[in-house]
Length: 111
Image 1 (spheres, one colour):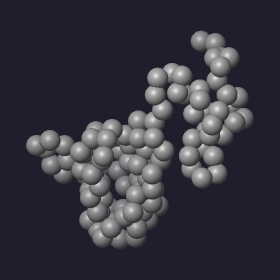
Image 2 (cartoon, rainbow, N blue to C red):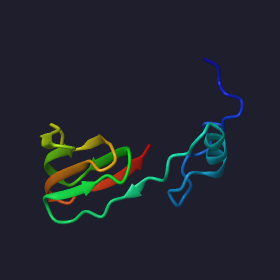
Image 3 (cartoon, rainbow, N blue to C red):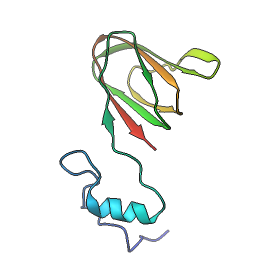
């Protein structure tokens, strides 16, 4: 597969200094039929913390001291994911519950 001549150079950062998509990449991806929203930091509440996905994407969990992560979708609740950090793919309205003793960093990455 060849390199797309319309794509920005790989030397151009995808995100600008404010965490938004840089203009060259925004323009390029817009012509492909859609641009995902920006990565959004999640304000973490008391443990166990439950995050409800506003739409499809991934929840990135890092740092802190996490002991369990579960997901609930439709009529299936609290399915253990077997991880304490990493990315969890979510659909709109999924609930991800994180049990921790030291607050992790969590970001929502839309698709």
